[in-house]
Image (tube, rainbow, N blue to C red; front, top):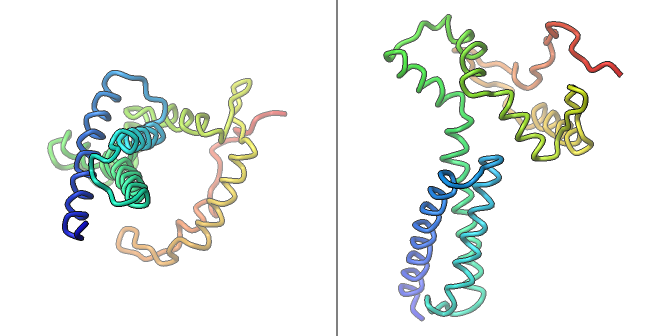
Length: 201
């Protein structure tokens, strides 16, 4: 099998995968229930890639099982990248929200109003608390008992890792409003609770 033929076969295989994936995603989000967009999108990627892997057989004339498994792996990585890049980022991104809000308000908003937009409009319009609590409960990071949100052991380990990563592997000189700062390395350093909202034991 020539290198050129193998390349054409691989491109055809991935092209078919993308077409089936996009069609499946469209049907999935319109006709089935979605718990967590990212997780369900990734599950769909794995399902489509695996089904195509199984039914393709020798139709694509792969030289070996290694070639076929390599194409499956490429499909998974490609689908995962698409799941992160499009539905997940657009669904979660505050940056996209600001662009959409600017367009909604005629293309221009006073700079001083952005903090109020985030706290008063964004959280309400996107049901930010509901969606994040749902995601974390589905992930096993927290539970809700007697109107109290509680970290699970898994959630506690994840929070510890996230804090370590933030303090050691995020940039110390990050541009924020024309100023380079390390403020986001430890955002809780000067954080003061509005009131004591801890659960009573």
